[in-house]
Length: 112
Image 1 (spheres, one colour):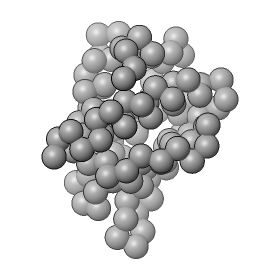
Image 2 (tube, helix red, strand yellow):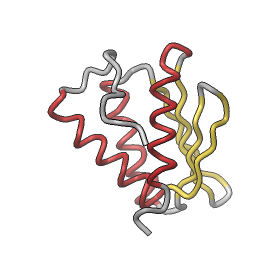
Image 3 (cartoon, helix red, strand yellow):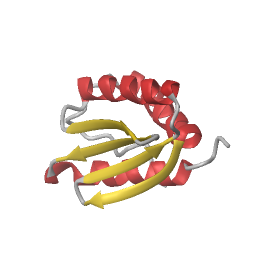
């Protein structure tokens, strides 16, 4: 499991707020993510529970995250009774995406 030192210098979220944001991601991973798939070295897809509250929570978290880590791109798709959140980044930030993927996989289903 990645340590807490993987946050890149490009992140503008104040250090004191980083544990709170990490906890938000951890709760999403543990409670709402059904599957984690690495689509490519620059793209991570999370299959979420098909629930409107989950989609809203994921959208809110993505919006907050783009405010401090503009190197991420988030795409939330709801179709055919499925909800997915795809997170993409440039090659220079692949290690950050690697750490996020490892964190998601380590917490998958932990809240169940």
